[in-house]
Length: 212
Image (cartoon, rainbow, N blue to C red; front, side, top):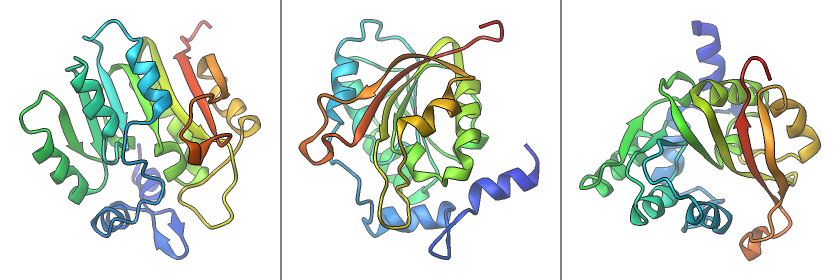
């Protein structure tokens, strides 16, 4: 990745402010994350509950307050990596999970290296500028092991105000993901929270190999 790409990924603007590490750090410092559920998302909880192999490697990219990681660890998953760009948040998570095996990394996800069986998508896709969505798809594909899965939630709505969060619909997402993933599930959530009912898509995408 060259310097121009890194600059693009770190400095997209919203309302004149750069969507970079400083922006996100201030959002968490000032508790201005309006889409934070303050709990593990019910659709993801249901998905985690049916997973049998507790040894899989899991990445939560743009992890936010990491309720998903806390829940996963509580039910026996130990190989969990969290990545976020906001240093204030990362330091708090490092302290919170200091007595666990959960890894917490302060990093731009586009610069992260690793290989995972499962990547959990919970509001990272909607937090980055839509111009970077293709970059996101390529990076998630790169970070997954063979037969790895990208599982999580995408907003199925447009927002009136300038993002983040940035919305969209299935018809926009499908052509982005289809060259890189096989869709196992791609449908409206039946078990969203009341506030998000009818506004979320649940995705379970399997990494495509070169010959698929």
